[in-house]
Structures are given as structure tokens and as C-alpha cells.
Amino acid sequence: MADGRARYCKVCFGVRSKQSYRKRRAEQGRTVKERIEALPGHKYCPRCAQVMPVADFGRNRSSGDGLSGYCKVCHAQVMLANKIKNHGSERNYLLKYRYGITEDDFGRMLARQGGLCAICRAVPGAFVDHCHRTGQVRGVLCFNCNNGLGHFGDNTVLLELAALYLDGEVFRPEFVVPPPPRRGGDVAPGRSHHLARRYNVRHEDVERMIADQHGLCAVCWDRPPEHVDHCHRTGEVRFALCLPCNTGIGQFRDDPGVVRRALAYVEAALPVQAEEYMDLEPSPRESARLDRADEEARSEFYSRVVRV
Figure 1 (tube, rainbow, N blue to C red):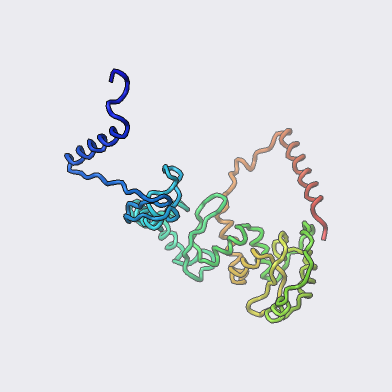
Figure 2: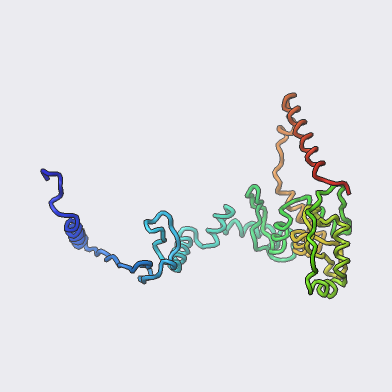
């Protein structure tokens, strides 16, 4: 137009534009979905064709209203259908997403293990195990062995200490980092009864045991003990352990042989350092820097520990 304005006002222009769009779609043999108006605080789900409260919709920061296009139930069904369509199954999608393998890879790995857990070799393997540091898939384990490795944090030193502990050889370190002072106070009413009924010991016996361990777990010597550990076969009380060590030993069925197989399993997957880097000699300047760093670390260590 000569004045730079549209012929129609905005309201009329919108009405004519909609009419024109519907006319073109009708000529193409297509229909136009009518917009469903929803009350404030509600939204229309096009899949189940229902108007629902916004609380029934998930969040989506990329949409204009910050909500997903479908309600939570429909969204879950659509996502499952997409996973099956694109990946064959939801399990195949999860294996690819978490571990970078397929169901066929999982089946071949389990077949190489004879269908059994790669550590205990006693029950069927069902869980993919991987190194949490590198992401490398190591094998297929049973629930107990997979959780046992998790409680020990894939730490080969702790696994070796746990195996020695189950053999009756408790490692006693020369230095320990003293834990914070234990809180005093009244003993829980049922604690003495629980200790006497389950372990045939008194609260005072447990406190003496913890004091003899310098307030630390008898396996890792790193965390305060929270649980009385006992032999599940004989019922004999052994020592006081922290939660991860006590639970990890239980997951490995109190069997030092299983713990040693777990140790060998983890060590077999450790990255091998290249020989060409092992033979490199540092420069005099780098050697001096390493010596200073080593001395600082040693000083800091001795400032925190006590001899036991």
C-alpha cells in the first residue's frame, strides 16, 4: 500500500488468513485441526484428546509454555514406541546409551562366560559391569558380585585387604588418620538387646572393639565403623566395619575365594601402561619439581596421621 499499511486491521487479517489457509488445505483434500482452548492452569493433550491440569505434563524448556506437548502418560508411551522403532527394544536402547553395546553384544559376552557370572561362576549373569573411571565394559555379573564391586569402589587394594580379612589376617597399618571424636550420649534403648540377641556381645564390648581399632573400620582403615561384622557360618563376631566394607563382604558371600576372583577380574581390565612411557627419564628440572611435590605430600601426610 502507498501508506505502508495493510489493507485490513490485525483482527480481520487474522480471520482472512485462517480462511485462506483452510481453503487451500481443503483443495488439497486435507483437514485442519481446530485449536482446543483450555482453561487457565490446564492444557490439551493431542494424543489422548483430553484437557488436563498442567501438573500432568512434564517440563520442556524448549517449548513456549515450558511444558511437554503430551501428558506424562502419553509422553512415556510415545518415548517407548520411539525406542522400539529406532533401537528394536527399550533394553537395546539402554544398553547403547549406558554402555555402548547392543543386546547381541550382551548375548555373545554372556555366552563366552557360559551363561554364568564372570566372578563367582555360581549363578547366571544378568548385569553389565563397567569401569566407572574409563567406561569400559568388563563383563556380565550377578547382582551380588556387581554390588560387591560397587561397595569396594573397584579398588584393588581394598579387595585384597578384604580377602585377607576373610582369611583371618587383619591388616594393621603403621599410621592412621584419626577420625573425628565419637559423639557420646545415651545408648539407644534397644541396642543392648539387639547386640546380645544377634551377636552375643554387649554395647561395652563393641565400644572396646572400636577403641582397639582406633575408631576406624578394620578393613579399609579409612572410615568410622558402623556395623558389627560376624561370620554367617559360625556366628563368631569378627570386628567392627564401615557400611561399604561390611556390605561388600556380605555381597561376596563371606568367601575369600570370590573376593580374590573379583580382584583378578578388576586387575585384568586395568589399562596397561605403554613401555615407551615407562622408560622415559624426566629432565633435571622436572625431576626437581617432582621431588619437591613428593616432599610436600609427605609432610602433609605426616601432619595428619598418628602412629598406632
